[in-house]
Length: 329
Image (cartoon, rainbow, N blue to C red):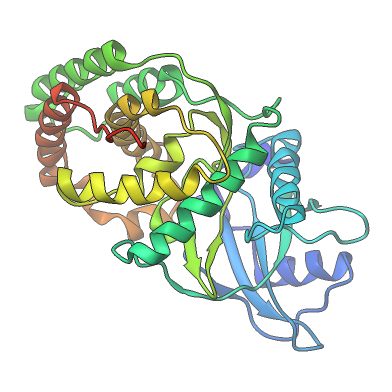
């Protein structure tokens, strides 16, 4: 079976297939498979015959090529070599990436942890320090196969997909696309070329666990882009709250990696990119049966009404003065 035969369909990913796929690489699952919280891929925790806990990740077919997944794995293993706490794939029989019945999959140690507390300044300082170390490794070379964050993937393609979909209620179409186009124009005006490095790519608080310090997980969205992409999703609250958080993050970050403060101007454009891209991601994945169950509000007119308001608010944020820290002496 080829990957294209079930591009958005994980229905063939049965427990028997999981068991046999693992057995083929020498891992015998003794427990059942506990599904973990993941929508883009399918991720399961299990215990082997020696009571060692693992996580197996089956990649969504047709999302990433073999070369792109291997770049993710190489980046993760480079970080581990620098003693950076990140969930990295295990090497089994000399390989980190395996295939079964048209699916790519990888095996990880099961690494538990508590929730990262975004309002805990001590934890935030630790995260900043390790982000600096991640980016120091990330700037040593670029991904050759994975994409670079840009307007086409995050704005233009999503707009086209949404325009050709049937999700936006008819009575909202004019205001929705009018405001979306105004947001796109504003982002275009504020978008500026910046140094690209290899990034985590999706560094929101849920992708950081806390053990004796931070543990970064899920490099599935790793790509090239500005360092600010891995910073802005850790900021929350009002402007003053964000300034305090940013100051803590960047002070510890700068112990290991230089940060170009001009990239602070990209925070709101990057937030706007994610807003548009997220809607299109849900629309694109809607034929996966897991999505209507997990995101029932996506088909509700109230959701789309709230997005029109969200566009207006983001346009206003883009026109506000960007976050700026006082120079350090």
